Image (cartoon, rainbow, N blue to C red; front, side):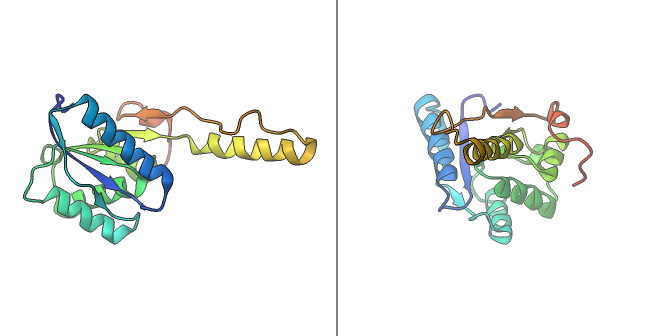
Amino acid sequence: MAGGKGTFVVFEGAADVDALNARTAGFSEVIRSDYPNIRLLPPVSHNDEDMPGIRGAIRILSGAEKVDGIFCNSAGGTVALYRAIQYLDLKREQIPIILGYDLNAEIVKMLEEGYCSMAIYQNPYQQAYNVLNYMFDYITEDVIPPKAQNYIPCDLVFKYNAHMFFTGIEA
């Protein structure tokens, strides 16, 4: 999408959430090691709060430095970008590539309208189901989960497959 070059920024959620920090570290590490022609700006933090998120997104989108891509490590950041785009009344061609995280009705709308290039979906239903299933087996049958950690594959969601994950949801 960016042709392996340009200027990117990470739009960070809550600093005290290890998973979000790991996402930022992983993204930054891959960019630095595999894409030498992409320059990473210092991350912009919004702490997964609405107004700081929208203000941070406005700073990124209307800043003096042109940004070619934004990686959001949380749903809150992705939605804040969408709201900032609406506030600034930007057209699709005026915004950078946005790599979102998680899915909700607003993010699906962003994908469908072309404002978000893709989103990483973690399948929260399956995550919760597995945890409850393991707990139930442990409590009722004293069965210890087979692994200390159980990873669930993530999906990349684009405009063309968003309907497979969310149907009939209004933003």
